[in-house]
Figure 1 (tube, rainbow, N blue to C red):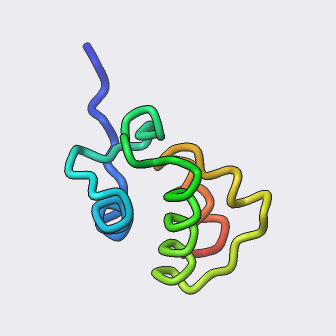
Figure 2 (cartoon, rainbow, N blue to C red):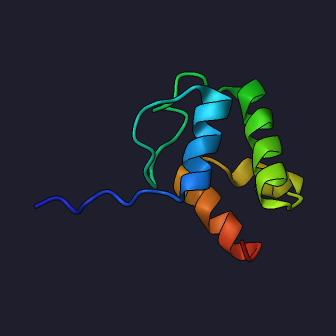
Length: 81
């Protein structure tokens, strides 16, 4: 029996819709492989949207960590948001 997919917080779903125009389900393992428009340029837009939405500043290393929706969730927890 497969475990139920864990969804991400609503703010991230909204960011994915705005930045990537992505309408599919967004779960912990959602990655650039799942999102057609998630390329290097849109990754910068993703970082900017995360920083603005959650009022945080990401280091270059943190920006590079954002490889899945779950990694974004983990980073936000580390920032206390």
